[in-house]
Length: 445
Image (cartoon, rainbow, N blue to C red):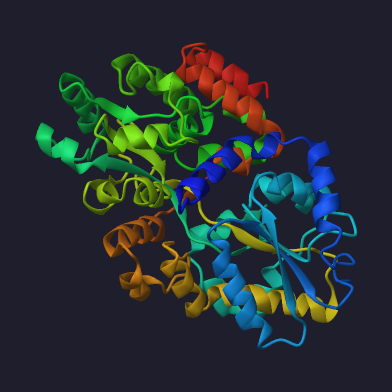
């Protein structure tokens, strides 16, 4: 979900991904009341000192936002105050504050389900009029990423962090010892399962204790079998739309992979939050790992030698009979800035001008210096400054050429669906649900 930059950041973000929405409302309310009541805000558009209150998820990337606030405040009469909210429980704090005097003026989010309830209640500013007045703002970002932050065709977010696609990583040393090449087709992938099993190596690392890592497999398989329109239909038509042939075929393929031993015998007890799957992968105990783009930074922090010379990457292959475009990707396109609809007048103009800084090359350079890959459409010439230019270019081209970028289902759907979705996925992998039972579980959410 996020991009870890260190061991602590990796664990915190992985924990946040699996437990963020499970934080208790009571705790969130208490934390918001105590930690944010004193941050100098008199409510949206009404800060006590006339400043603009901007919330950001606090982690190692926050320094990029701190730097842009400093630059912006040198140009603006209305100053930005950056409130760094600890990542654990950020989503609950955001939800608890909206509609109260302590709500932020501008805030970090994941798009999709993380803001859909706010949109329904007219709490967010529709940014399409601002883009119509300034067409260059819309052109500044890769279209699939900008659109991933839209709700019902309207844009409520401006991309403000790096892209986060799910990538098929592989261990170069393990492949070399086996005389193998990265898979270019589904048949290649199935043959590699047998190849590595014969070598005593688990074909794919999988953190089975963290259901969101398994969800990545289901998301890609549904996309490859039926295309991005399958999940788009689910979002627009509701849970009954899970009854799609592509979802059933994806579930059957998951059971086939498990039965073939693709994930080994102990995946149910392997974790991601404590670097279990990533360590097995880096140590050569597993040959491949389907994971978000943050896996590179995670390995760089914890297994730097492996990240430098042993980590390879490729695309998720097409599947036989699938109608989905093999260039499409899944994952978290990026994070977004959104504006509270109660922000009016000069403050609203200031909020929009502040968000425009995310489209500037200075901001993209800061992201690259932080190890991220920007979502701006003109970033190609800047990628040579990335700590691993080859990886940055692969990731950037992967996303820029993708006809669709499907937001992770547990972020795209309203938060109430996350626990039952994770449970159903985990039970599918563990053999507690048949493919047909998986569909029934999803339709019953």
